[in-house]
Length: 263
Image (cartoon, rainbow, N blue to C red; front, side, top):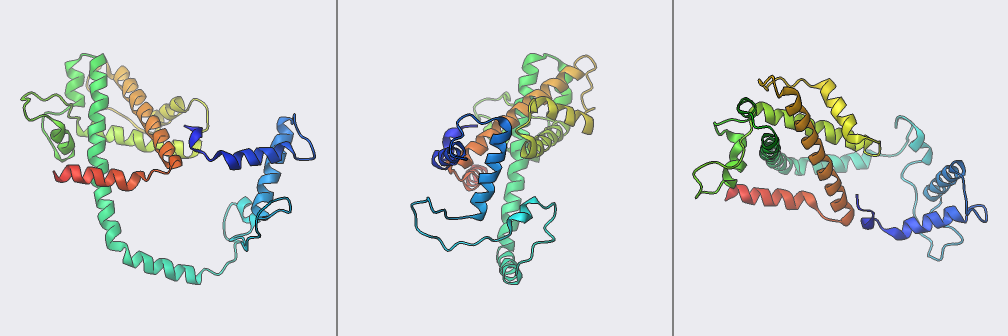
């Protein structure tokens, strides 16, 4: 994560208010800091304009009550949503066809990119473990639909294949790891030992029995999990940094891969 992409002015102002809370709070304890932080955060949500601010009055109002933030369900929120629902229904009808096309392109993008990245992971593993039986279990010699990107990346002048073509089971294995890692990072990215916790979670939920090599079965699984989780965490942090920077990653990446596939 790169904190330089955050706008530092609101953060500096907020912590300046924490410091000046109760006249002078230069050396707060952990308990007083948490209490002050919560108090100022809730006050900022309730009160849009303060007498000490040197700015114009804004005619803003709250969309929902602050109490709703502390509820477990939104059943108690009372608001007139009839107009909003009508607008949403019209928008969904107009964009239904476009959404199908975008979803199809994105699904094709995910399948091909997953197979290509799986081949990269397997190539790293085979560089560490020189085993023909492991290579037979992890790779395939028959090109399928999921290997189109890998085939396009091959050089025409080279007769021997240099890139790794993963098996269907390995692609599914990698896809399961990516889904579980992204789901874990969405809610628990701030926890300690993230990589180890994700590895334990995946081992308890999935069985990976496609490797027929008894000598390297366990070590190959450890390498596969380690490389896949490490790659996914790096990619997740990179995407968050791009979002903080203001880069539109969705449109650019989809358009680029679509153009590559057409050619």
